[in-house]
Amino acid sequence: MPALRLARLTLHDFRSFAALEVHFTAPIVCIAGANGAGKTNLLEAISLLGPGRGLRGARMAELGRRNAEGALPWAASGRFETPYGGFTLGTGTAVEGAADRRAFRLDGEPVKAQSDLAERVAAVWLTPQMDRLFQEGASGRRRFLDRLVWALEPAHGRDVAAHDNAMAQRNRLLAESRADAAWLDALEDAMARHAVAASAARRALAGRLNAVLASGSATGAFPAARLDLLCPIAEALGREPALAVEEALRAGLAAQRRRDAAAGGAAQGAHRADMTLVHVPKALPADLCSTGEQKALLIAVVLAHAALIAEARGFAPLLLLDEVAAHLDAERRAALFAALAALPAQCFLTGTDSTIFAPLAGLAQGFAAAPGKLVPAREYGVRESKGNTILEAEFTPLSKQEPPPA
Image (cartoon, rainbow, N blue to C red; front, side, top):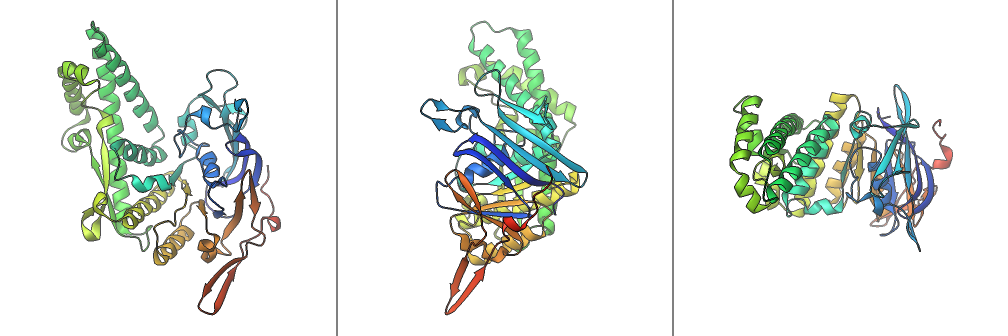
């Protein structure tokens, strides 16, 4: 079993689920169902048990199940098992405060900072929307990169948030006719410090991830990939000490106040970072690769990242793979399943066609998704015909499994 395992998920008025309690007993969980059955909702709920805004990046007020009066208060809870004991993480609508805020509890006690969650739980996901990652703007790629970093360095999120907060305050001051120079100095100092810290963490992650990708130990038959970080601050950190880079950034921000005021934003900072993946055998950047190749590159990165986190932190992140088989041919699907079986990570896969998961029979736990519920696949009846031969596979029934202790 993986070192970190989600053993039980409980939902209350979350998205399409009025109430749900489900036990997971296998290292790979397959969820099949029609579009709109709630498969992605389940993965989103799991992603919200860690830090951040989840795999959809939705506002908290959007997550409650809706009735005639609007969105209801919602809650999600996960029971996790580790070799050192279990713990329960819960999140949901805050009892007090704004509707777009949520509360966290760890074994029933309030959690002060999301970084405390990152020390216990990490999740990485691929969704169909990420198929456009290399055709759209840099912000999506930066969020993808930061999730990879956050799983390795729980403090990274604080640096990114502090940088963005200082930048937002600086933007407001610059928009005013009489900006306070001392206040601007302080905000630019904060921007420089946190930008360098965030860029250093991104740069370190890229280096370590590329080492795992180059070895091929975790990616199996997927193409060799390389993550290239496109960031002037990170490039400067490769040439100069961090303090010198900070000072140069502070000076640059101060010198560009007039330009930034006119443009409505800072030309320098951690928010300007971007990344790309390179298909090493073809020496092609991802934006020039086919859709299938882009998907294969992203899968290679996720597999390598899971192995890296397992080595560095003692547990691999949960892998949430929504419709992951889309754009993968049969050979690459087989490579994916083989790689997942070898990883020390718990994986959740969704798909509209249950037959895709047939090769995982005996290893995976299967569910059928329907609006508002999740049905154990006691008799999935997974059938695949090849010529005159009918191949059958049945997932391990949940009813035959002992539920994990509460």
